[in-house]
Length: 232
Figure 1 (cartoon, rainbow, N blue to C red):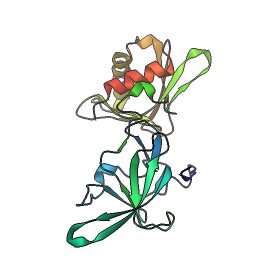
Figure 2 (figure 1 turned 90 degrees about the vertical axis):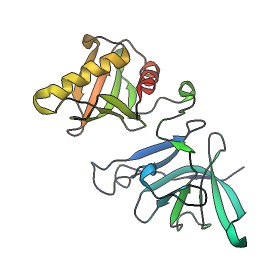
Figure 3 (figure 1 turned 180 degrees about the vertical axis):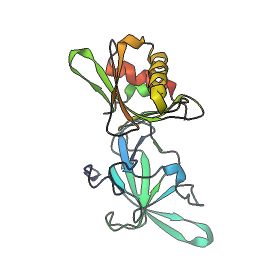
């Protein structure tokens, strides 16, 4: 059996820059299993020239992995040089998702994320097989609650991300005088196919955070409708 490497985390050790820090949850693009939590977007990290892997510097960024150890591989690079990789696989489908150069994961300086292996959307290729993320939860009485992060005053109204922590929504209306909240409700009603009377918007944990409570849809139905509407 492959060794499973699981790092547990809390809200305290997962937010090095304070409670308002952005955390990004990445899933296996093939099966949707949770693989990585970090405090930076992978597309903003440097890429290796050899294989286009994203370079995650553990000295400056959070790296919480949930993977299986897959052993050591020696690769031949240019000019006859050998590269040592300690590989890590997805726990759900055993897909090769990342590697490091040092044997000890705790002391490794960098984690290299295989190009195209991870996604911020669970089971991007087959949303029906993905578990409903924690940001979409069932309440008593058949209600469903959605944790939303809102960016007001954007160029367009759109859903740009669905991950474990929240649904990120950009709204064209300004935040002043409740205009953004009104547009958010109208926009989400169109996305979910609901009437305004079937939804309630509540305040979240900070100015950008909102909790949307909806009627007459299951958590799964809400999740699938949100995924269909994502426009990165």
